[in-house]
Image (cartoon, rainbow, N blue to C red; front, side, top):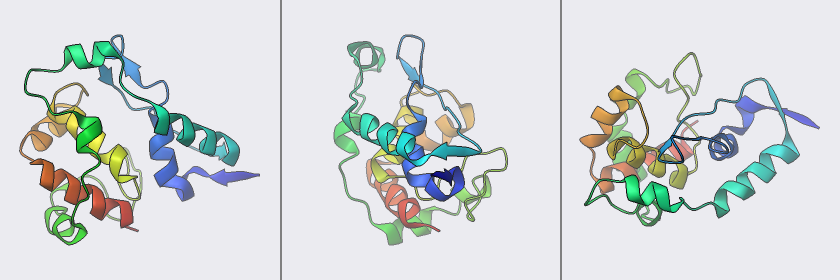
Length: 153
C-alpha cells in the first residue's frame, strides 16, 4: 500500500538522511522526498537511520569544542518553552507543516531535529541562514524546539 509522504512527516524526516552525506560524509545535505513512498520503504529507512552513527571523518571534521550531537539529541526538551521559541522558526517554516519551498519541520522525531540543528550550528550542514540561527541557540533551546515541533500539527 502506498501512503502520502505528507502524512508521514516524522518518519520521512528520518528517512531523508539516507544517502545524505556529501564531502565524504563531513556534512549532511537534505534529500527531499515528494509524492508517494511505499510504507515498507519508509519503515525500513527509519529503521536504518535509527542504527546510524557518524563515520570517523565526520568527527574529525567537527571544530574543537563541538558537542557530540548523538549524545545531545538524547536531551528531553520542554515543549512549552519550544512553543515560546518557535515564532522565529515559523517565519520561514510554515506552522501548518506545508512544504512550499522551505522544508516542513513539524512532526520531526526530536533526535533528528536536534542533530540537524547541531549540524547547522557546527557548520557541517550547509545553509547560511540556518547556520546563523542555530548558532544563537543553546542545547536547552534546541531540545525545547525539537520537543515542540515533534508534537506540532
